[in-house]
Image 1 (cartoon, one colour):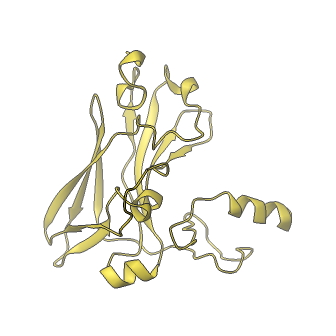
Image 2: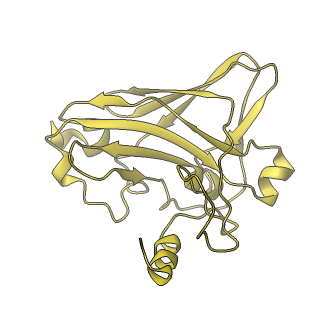
Length: 189
């Protein structure tokens, strides 16, 4: 069991949204969660389907409901903290990649509206510099990687104002076999 000071330090390293909120998933109890941290347990009623292409990753966002559902677009700070790719290699802890190193000329809360009974496609190029901050992924180059897309949207004034869904949804995992050019570029081939 971690000590409280160690636990607080671990919370401080988690990605936050532009309002400083941290979306925590996969926990059963809020006991020990520092005050001011929002725990997101609600599911967003969308289906994410991951497709790994040679040079990128595509996420099909499918809405099977009778109303439009809005989620954050990748090209702003809200989307940069909401969208991630989880990479898992057998025998190693999972790594979460986020586009948190984006440079903005202007940072506005843009969203993607997925109409009722329709789908949208989100293009992800994780080998770009905005996805690779602080990650040494070289040990993964020659190993099969299980990849999963995740969308976790924490409550915020902007989400409420723009009627963006709050909660989480994950794709099923997809196995990527080397050379993973979508992640490492042509030099990995």
